Image (tube, rainbow, N blue to C red; front, side, top):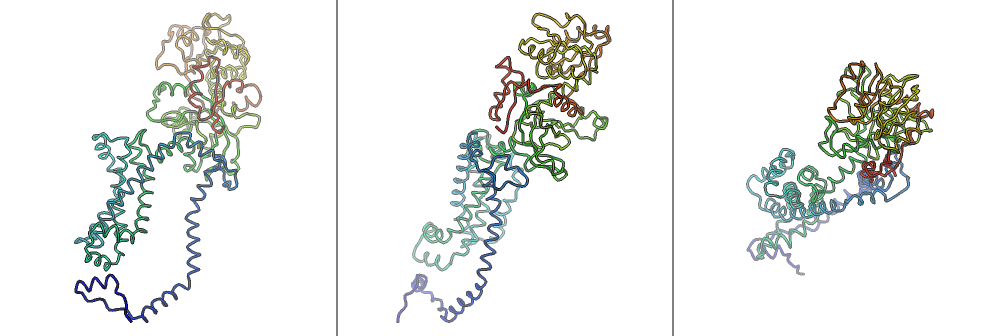
Amino acid sequence: MTTQATPAEASDARAGRPSPAPVPKGRRRKKVEDTSEGLRGGPVWTLIAWILTLFFFAPVAWMVLTSFHREVDAARNPPAVFAPLTGEQYALLFSRDFLPFLINSATASIVSTLLVLVLAVPAAYALSIKPVEKWTDVMFFFLSTKFLPLIAALLPIYLIVQAIGMLDNVFTLVILYTAMNLPIAIWMMRSFLAEVPKEILEAAEVDGAGLMTVLLRIVAPIAVPGMAATALICFIFSWNEFMLAVNLTATRASTAPVFLVGFITNEGLFLARLCAAATLVSVASVGVCGSDSHYYDHGRIGRFVVEQPLVLGHEAAGTITQVGAGVPDDRVGQRVSIEPGVPDLTCAQCLAGRYNLCPRMRFFATPPIDGAFAEFVAVHEAFAHPVPDALSDDAAALLEPLSVGVWACRKAGVTAGSRVLVTGAGPIGLVSVQAALAFGATEVVVSDVNPARLELAGELGATTLVDARTSSPTDVLRPPGILLECSGFPPAIGDGIRALDRAGRAVLVGMGGDEIPLPLSVVQERELVVTGTFRYANTWPTAIALVESGKVDVDRLVTGRYGLGQAEDALTAARRDPTSVKVVVRPQS
């Protein structure tokens, strides 16, 4: 009986080398038998493997399931497993031009992964089959480059890329991702290629096969699993990379992670950042303030300058959907009005009760703090004020501008029998009119140039209306004792101060220029008190009570409602429509 020689044995024979001694058949059978004995516990290990697999893939499954839920359902605690499924999140994602970012990520990740494999396989082959002296040191060097903090190399990389004109170019990311992943790929592939039988390679060499033939016909087929694992790791690293993408791209080459960070920042960043004393509020309504429009148009108000992308909106209300560890669980589900400024509560001003003057105040939509044009915001529990069911979502949001009017009346000392002049019939002027009447004022004069707003002021209780285009507040029969200046317009400020009675008080509420002319002789001769106001402190209980009792009607101010995607239209509504008073944004609609 004859046996056919293996390719390795034939090569050995041609090369004049002795063939290796055959392994006795009995030993081979013994080896198989021993292996089978070790596999008797196979079902147990299989079960354990499945359990571990399910454990590690459960978060991925949960993420996929959550992506088909509404934001409100996704944020519930406990989680809403059987919430209605919807594709609106994906529709919203792609409605925001996500596709170009997705294409950039796919291009950078796939091309760089292919380049890594092309470069890593020959290098790993050389180190595994014909290792150089001290090859372990070489491998350590390759692996150690992966531990280099990327931020340390970012500045020189940026300067080099800028110098060669490759900023905002997807192929810049391809080159950098290739260099970033090549060390780990060589390290991984070397381990896989070290398992290739050297006898086969020697036989191929004897047969005259060149390096490329060996790599393509012998090494590559054997190392396919290792190449697949290496490619998967490199692809994941490239796809998730953020530091280089966010700093080296702008518009044309930005990747999916860069897009998603902006998306999450605007609509759900706080889901993972609840502090111990925080509540997560699903925002139902946000009023558009004049300061929002001013930031949008001019990029600054006084010393507050917009220097980076800013989410606007600070007149907000909604429902608490999640709480931090230090907040009672029964607050979940409460409808709340948000007081948008959180002080440090430890400075001298806070301890004196003037927390609105806290130098470390974090106020919504005031640079650099993002605001409430979002589906969710995180709020300190003390500044999420519960509101009664009688208040609409819009009314709950507009408790913020009403608080400005309440604070102005307190600063001015409005009381029973007061005669009040309000200059400017915008939203703040109109809530100040109602607050003054609620505080006991018997005469409220309103001055403005907009007939529609003057008419609304009369409907809300103003006793005298002055069209500033043809008349002046100084023409009223009985001079007012209090001025609530809500326009910020220098001529209106001057006329208002001149209209005051002796020993009167002028409270400057409206935000005007940094400097304005002041009729100083009038102030001195009449001993007028002129003061400013800055936001408010401890006003929400009063504002809630005034609206709930019906003494103040803030719903009458609302003249337009917009979705979150229409925020730009909401910010510019007043310039398009002279009858517009207060518009609100509905993030959940």
